Length: 357
Image (cartoon, rainbow, N blue to C red; front, side):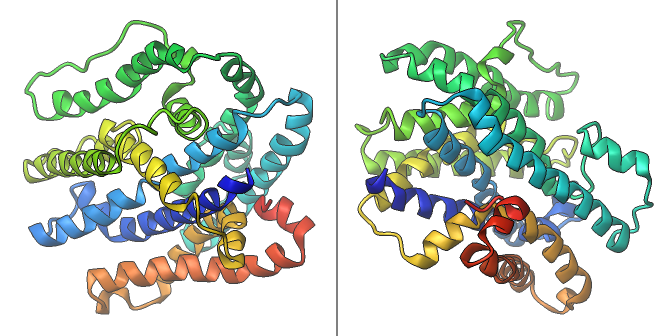
C-alpha cells in the first residue's frame, strides 16, 4: 500500500475536484440540460464538456472504494462498527443540517414528517448531492460479504461473464434506451428479463471495476495511448449523443449524463487506470494528503457553499465561464478552510462530522 498510497490520494483529490466542478457547472447548465433554456453551440459545448468531466468524480470515488475495501479480510461486525456506523452517523447529521439549510435558504417548509422520512431514507434529500449517501451506505452494508466473495476467486477470468452481463444490463441497455424512448417514435425501452440485482447493480460495476483495475491489473497490458483513445472516443460519442438530443428538443431523459451511460463508465474506468499509472511513482505532499483525507468533507460542504455563493454573488454580471470558475473555487476553497482544523487538530470531531480518516 505504501507504493500505491500516493496515487490513491491523487485520485481522491481528482475525484472531489470533479464533483465540485460538476455542481458548479450544473448551476448554469442545469436549465439547458432540462430544456428550460437554449444557448449557442459553443457555449453548450463548453458547459457540457465541464459537466461531463465533473461527472467522473463519482466513478473515481467508487473505484477507490473497491480498491481499498474489496481486497481486505475483515469481520463484518468489526467493519460495521469501525466504518459503517461512523458513516451512518455523519450521514444522519448532515441530513438534519441540510434540511435546516434548505428551510432557511431555499424556502422549504419545515415538516417533522419530511425530516424523519429523510433520516430513514424514505424521502429524497433536499440537497441533490446527498443522493450519494444512501447509495454508499448500501454499498458498505454489503462490502464485507462482497470482499469475501471477490477474494475467493483466484482466476481473474472468472469475473468476465458476470461482469459483461452486468455491463449489458446496467450500462448498454440504459444507454440505448435513452434514444429508443426519446428519438424513436413509439419506441419501447429494452428490458432484460434476467434478475441481475445480485451482481450489485450499477454502482457495483464501478466498485468491482476499480478493484479489478488496481488489484488484479486487468488493464495493465493495454497501452496508455489506447486507454487515452478509448477515453476520447467515449467522450466524443457521449457529447455527440447529448447534442443530438439537445438539438432535437429531446429533454425527457438526462441519462447520458448519469452513471448508467456506457460512455461515462468507460471514461471513468480508463481515467482511473491512467491515474494509477501516472501517479504510482509520485510522492504525496502534505497538502495533497490532507485534501485527500478531507475529500468526503469537501463533498458534504461544497454544495451548500455553492448555493450561498449563487444567491449572494453577482454571477449575472460575469461570463458563464467566470461564474462556473467562481462557484467551483468557492465550493472547494471555503470547504477546505472549514475542514483544515478538523484535518490537522480536531481529528476525532473530524471523523464524526466529516468522515475524515
